[in-house]
Length: 121
Image (cartoon, rainbow, N blue to C red; front, side, top):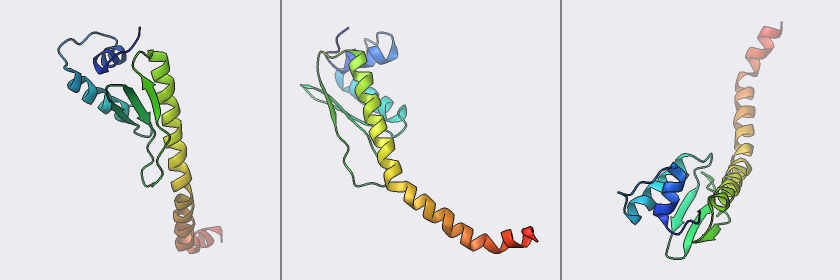
């Protein structure tokens, strides 16, 4: 099945036909679903030419590569683009935040090192 608008995309994501949604309602539902059900909270947008999905890394100033699909794509193509975007976002988050996590853990260790030495005696 070819996806030609947000209503088609929403119906394919849901596995059923929701005929009551207007195009803008379907677009909002897909956007919410893409954010909610990806690990990094991917971004979704749609226009008259197609859709764009991109990863998101909270705490980062990095703009992730947008995956653009022209209308007429398949669900397999959409799922593949969304998967890649999600991986980008997760990777970006780790690149931005892992160093901070190590710093926090090390700082906490220094604050509590005396307790560890007392229990070793």
